[in-house]
Image 1 (cartoon, rainbow, N blue to C red):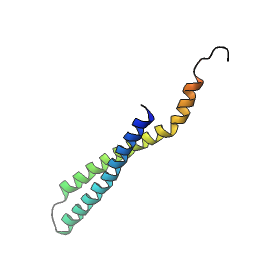
Image 2 (cartoon, rainbow, N blue to C red):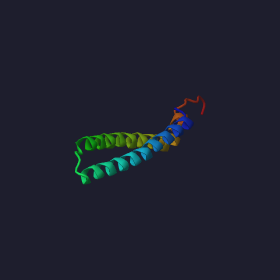
Image 3 (cartoon, rainbow, N blue to C red):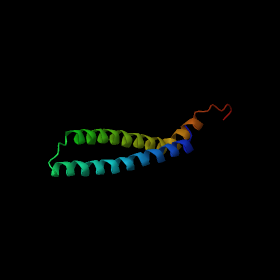
Image 4 (cartoon, rainbow, N blue to C red):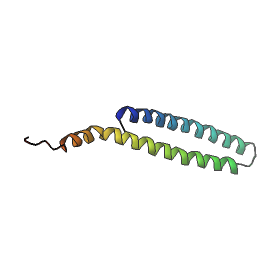
Length: 88
């Protein structure tokens, strides 16, 4: 994958992480409101757990993209050094 595409994927991953933070905060507030008002919170808690699972996946994906982008100069150097050049 070229660097431009990887940067585009990183932007999408960053947005997913930011959206996830917002969704988790909103769900935590809903859960608190339900609990405060004496309502059953089981389904709201289950949904929050799913949001956290998704968030962990988004963060892991973003981190893998960041690692790949940081390694790109090293990978390019290795590729150029690996080319056989007779007479050099």
